[in-house]
Length: 68
Image (cartoon, rainbow, N blue to C red):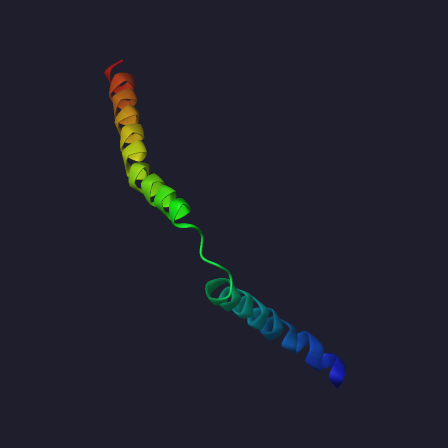
């Protein structure tokens, strides 16, 4: 009977492990330095600009191909 309990409990043990590690990461690990947060925010601000530029290039290429 105990042989059946171990495989049945394994997903719950893995879930508890992942949830515990997530809690540990949020509450125990130190926060990153403020400078690193500023860099991440700056990169996040520039990401939409880069994708907008790519969209314009794609549109230009599409129009060029359609004009042939």
